[in-house]
Image (cartoon, rainbow, N blue to C red; front, side, top):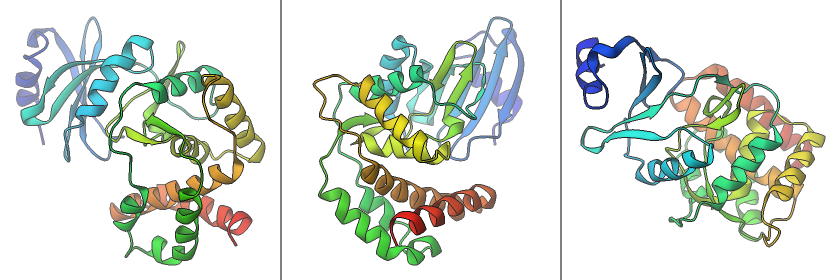
Length: 268
């Protein structure tokens, strides 16, 4: 745990320490240690990465910040796994997914870099011994075969579109935390939104249609509720496995309720 004096020492790399008026540890991040540092002029977010250095995500944020999609990284310390961003004031998203945000997501997906595509089967295999995987093993295997046979809608995906990673203020909705960003099927991000906002059938149709209207007319994207539901199941299993591994039971319980409802209505 970083104490105040160490925090001030770190901050001296990008601001004058005497300009700091407050600092606090943010508790809404589970993967990393996050700190909000304020000066009279503005706020800064210090992220201390615990697992890997997200070079791809950081480069993406540097580019996408110019499009008013996310905050820009302003200082990087790869050796110690630390990065500082301009802090976006606001609250985590709660209800509506605006057309403006869908347009921003489509721009993220167009970001011109190709990485090794996310291997969802491999990610799921990590949780093969968990209760949720065991309980829904047949549905998981069925869905993995189904999506493998579907067209792949390639894009640079955020891959962690939970509400806490969408900030809302008077200027709009912004994305943060590109730690898991890489090439994937864009339906993974769309499914994450459908899960995070617990969208009903009509809202899911609107999401797909609005996204189709936001992408390039030359895009091969075609709205498919069947494909969205497949990716919803995969995203739900991954999230439940992740939360339960860390004993975050309140989040897990809400997602399990969604998963049960989805399986009973679609995959029985």
